[in-house]
Image 1: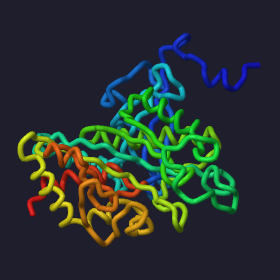
Image 2: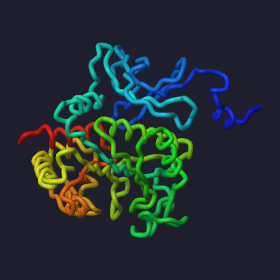
Image 3: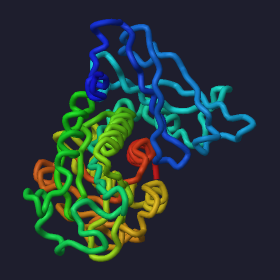
Image 4: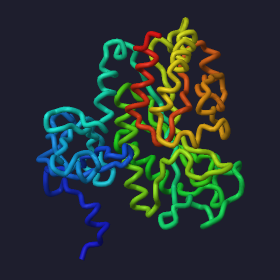
Length: 357
C-alpha cells in the first residue's frame, strides 16, 4: 500500500493533462478564507479563461438559505505549492447570480479605484508588512510560551535565533519558499518583537495585485499551519499587557512622490490628506485595532494623527532615505494585521490621488 505522502506527492503530469484548480475566496467574516477544488482539462495561465463557479453562501454567512447561490469570478492565478506541477491556486471574488458584487466583496470596489485613469497614471505600488502570531492548537496560547504562563520580557526575540527565542521557524521558512514558488512577490520575513510572532512582506506590488498577492500568501500560510497543527492568528493584540500587537504596515509610493525634484513636497501633501481623513481610515483599517493603537509598543494613539521621519511611534513614518533623497515612499503604520488589503490599498490611493480637499 502506498504511503499517504506518496499519493499526495503524486506527479499527475505522467498520466494526464488535466490539472486541479483550487478556487479561493473570502468568507462572511472578512477574514475566513474558503476554498474548493475542480478539475480542468489542461493548464491555464489567464484567469479570464477560467470558468466561473458557485458556492453555498448560506454556509459562509454571505447569503440566505432560500437564495444561497453565490458566483465566483476568477481574478488571479498562482502556482499551487501543495499539489505542484501545473496545478493552480485561483483568487476569486464573489457576486450575486445577477452579477452584482456581494457586500463582503471588497475587491470589486478596489478594482474600480485602481482602474481610474488618474490612479493608473500614478502607478501606485505597495509593500505590505504582514504580522501574525502562531498559537498552540489546543490552548490558543502563543507558540513557545509555557502553557498558562509567560516567557521573559520582550527584547531578545526580535529577529532572533535560538531554541529559546525563535518559535516556528520551520513554518515561516516553508511559507517563504511556498510563496516564491507560487509566484507571489514576497520580499522577506523576520521574527517579531513578541515571541511566537512573525512577519512577512509582500511587494512592491502595483494596484490591485497587492491585495491579490497578500490574500494568496495568507491562504498558503493557513494551509501550512494546518499541516503543522498550529493555529494562525491575525488578531491585532493577541496578548494583553506589555506585549507588542500585530499590524500590517503599508508602504506606499506613486509616480508624483518618486520624482527627483519636488517628490518630498508631494509626500508631505499626501500625508496631509491622510490626516484629514484619519477617522475614515481608522474605521477601515481592521477590527480591534483600538486594542493595538494605544500610543505604546511602537504605535500612535488611535485618536491622534502624526507623522515623522524614522518615527515608529507615528501614524505615518517617512524613512531617512526618503528625506535625504527628497523622494520615495512612506509607511502607513495604522493598519491592523487583520485588515483587508483591498480596502486599505484602494483607500490610500483614493485619499492621496483622487481626493481634492
